[in-house]
Length: 314
Image (cartoon, rainbow, N blue to C red):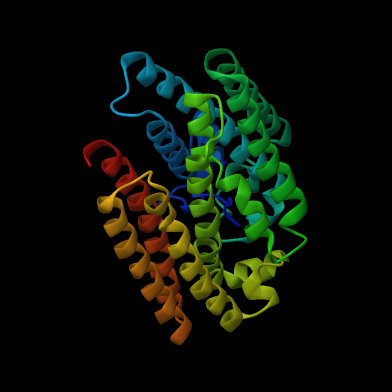
């Protein structure tokens, strides 16, 4: 469970504090709220919802809509718990980076005990909701995603290897699988295809961000790819991954889970991503890296929206 270093997720969408915002001026409830990385969690829940919708043939019934709503709440709570735990673990790193120095944990506005208790409470409530009202499979998959992001990625992989975002990206690619499991109590090939798309989307999305934030990562001591292998190598990896991503984005059409509308959208969106990556590879600038990062967010959101529209109207 873009949008993060950001979380490896489509959840790898990264949003700075509002201009002029001061954490110390926030009420306590809002300090807790921002720990959940709301924009990141919104993308996670959106991708999970797409998984739910794709798992239901035709228009969902009233009970199915209610089930989707409850599943989204449970997934949101556990994803927010993982984000809060990440803020706690990385508070010293966040304090050194302009992008994250505003977070309440980085500024010391919330104590370790408060952040940990908040994360544990969200995880417990979200897991209980999923176990009781959805199914045990969804609960365990969601909890495994929490562990994958909050522990395996944040604590182990991120400070250990420049391939952290590639390996750890598996947790960020899980939302459609969670959504599919919530409606079917199983993990189908369609869910795995959506997982693969997000998994391959994550590295070029995140490395575009890391390119123009490289000094922050160098200062923090994290072994991000632009720090360990340089700008030119990272730009090449971004370009190569966009070609691999294109192949993955064709799978829904090839497998038969989507039609021509999705195929057209996938071709246009991936052509745009490849074009941005190609320009970035040929001639680097921070502005172009930012444009590539922002386009990657548009790419994922519109790609999954195209899956949704195609599912209902074609």
